[in-house]
Length: 400
Ligand SMILES: *Cc1c(COP(=O)(O)O)cnc(C)c1O
Image (cartoon, rainbow, N blue to C red; front, side, top):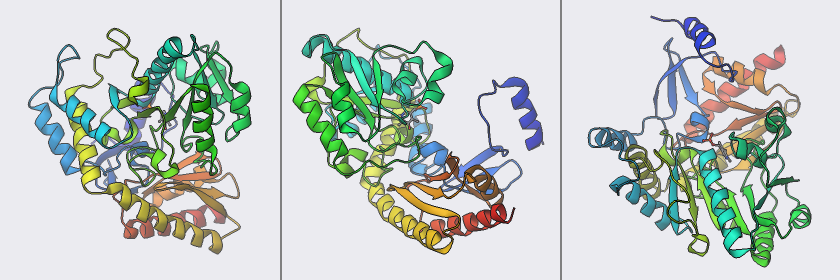
């Protein structure tokens, strides 16, 4: 058997080194747990980066993939296909959106949303083509989306940046107003910043954006790549804030593990026409069959409602942890099952490494913050187990 050390050696020999990975080789997953090549079991509070929302290898999704893989794998968009239209229907019937286009990832969905906004600006706002985004955001890694992503760390090495993006401070409506010109066609934000450290906007921020966009005939784009598909305790994040966007993107949890993305729009801005956009794989029958099974299972079984309840339980446990060891834990923030534990010191990577040893997977989203993004199907007992293991991990790190 090839050992973990040997796989690591192969990675450094064959794979372009852009990831600083945890040392384990993960081989198998089921529900809320995964196993590495040494047979060690982990409770997975990373869920493939907020992807496996129904848990690993959910039977409803696995069955849909197996059936589709034996029926038809790819046709391109030269033809109509059934899973694509079934998923489109499921998304429209369960959101405030009217139309859908499928891509293969989150970043690609965002690129499509920006193309749609620019077409809208060309047709309905005198040729406006600029997009306002906010600092500390994350919209993906293409040359276009690093310009949208308001984090210098993602941008500086890749100059010149794509034109037409302005990054303004987060949670600052005046900054949005000041940055708006007659060239602005859209404002794009996450409803809650995931990669930026799980930053929840204050009451009124998204509503204020909605009003500003309405007054100025500017599209409001919500990047729900991370916050959608039940993550915040409602199928879509915008529901928790009671603000509807004009355009919305989804990806991560959409296929419960298969690579799929989508951008959606209201009829009022459904401006793309034949030839404007396309994709060889986007809307592929295999990925949309998985997506269709995922969305329908999630809706029929009210998984978002479950996520909201268990999320509240997780928050109560984090509050207990804060009260018990204020020297280490500063607090927590988040919504549904996207929560960050805030630490007094930049020990998050060390705590996560120690938590791996204890058998729970977590994500050090910032040097001093640990992100929880488990499968939405976790139980209170899973949360208790996570807390026990995390407490032991913190003990190890603090004891030095
Ligand atoms: C992960 C993420 C993306 C990028 O998605 P990819 O599938 O990695 O391209 C974009 N926006 C948000 C909010 C994300 O969390």
